[in-house]
Length: 124
Ligand SMILES: [Zn+2]
Ligand SMILES: [Zn+2]
Image 1 (tube, rainbow, N blue to C red):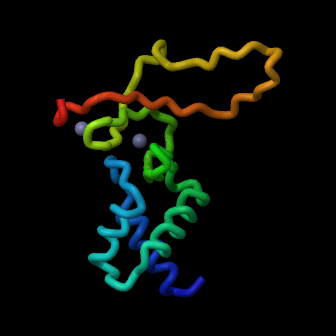
Image 2 (cartoon, rainbow, N blue to C red; image 1 turned 30 degrees about the horizontal axis):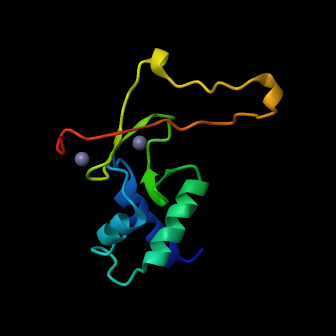
């Protein structure tokens, strides 16, 4: 890996780590461009996929758009249908959705992602 590529990955990581707003590749690109005016959206996108493959980011796909989340621990999300913002939420263990499957279906559940939809405080 060249120094330039390593530097790009670092700048992109700096832009997303500790980020709670679940930015999209476009939003991260806008941020990274301030430090690296010549970087392309494709490069940002590829580096984000690499960070996800390296286990540093989770990718949430909401309405076919990828949102990047550095909080790796499994957690539910609240998605505002008005402004599109994605929030981390904490649920009571007892409220966690459990898949109801009969053993005869032959499905193996490897993961599930709980998303709640509604209107956020700023939009309601
Ligand atoms: Zn909202
Ligand atoms: Zn999250």
